[in-house]
Image (cartoon, rainbow, N blue to C red; front, side):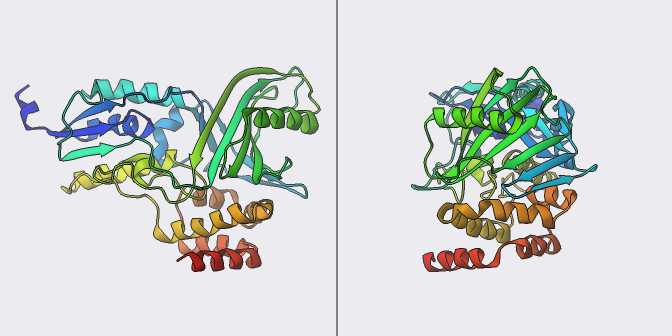
Length: 360
């Protein structure tokens, strides 16, 4: 009891993935106490799936995930590329299962949850996990997915479809992401990279037409629906006076929108710093060269989206499954980085580089 007087206080604004993921690790920080401030008027949290490849930093999420696949595909009008890995399979985790687990562990470790504004924000270790500011006309990754059940077996339950570009490309980069939970049940998601969201009917109609065209299924049961928007590119801290964590701390990978694994990496690195008697800080988990490469890619996807199928299919053909998983998980050395660079169509990336150089 008396020991509590000597604990260093941490306070985090926000109760999303980053805040609760960190809260679940408080057992590794015995000299600290943590208070989570639940934001006022926050949008209602909806369940959805997070996908990631096996990685040492994801041991707990992997244990909680109910499904994994050793193969994944990228499909265009011209070809199907299938990658596979036995050491880095693809996992899917339900958001609510992870959040419930983290909250349970956090409470066991003495973490407090209070409404925002009920305590003063003058602590030395105050961090903000609320969504970052999104620049005007930024490229957005927006999606709507439906978990569907069909009567006849039609889905290949061994292979995740990461990207199937055989859908309407008139609005910009557009693909189907499909997670087969069984031969009769799958999450089918219509995903676009454009500056503006579309009416929800567009995504639903796309899913219906896709399932009908590719699987010859005209009727299916919709079990649940999920949707979301992920800002792409460089994002500004919500409050420049309060250090960020998670998406508000630079964890979102600009070129893919992946955040879950990078949030866990960011937290692990911060805890390791404390264990080395350094101040608690959350730093970007991305290397500057990778952020620059993403910047060029996003310029191309925004201004010349018709090249997207070629870009991603060529990368899929150039890399093996382990390399592909490493690249999208941020475990990149120069050998792998150069392999990705040399797989890209040279002319369009030269145009992207020129457009970036002009903007400097």
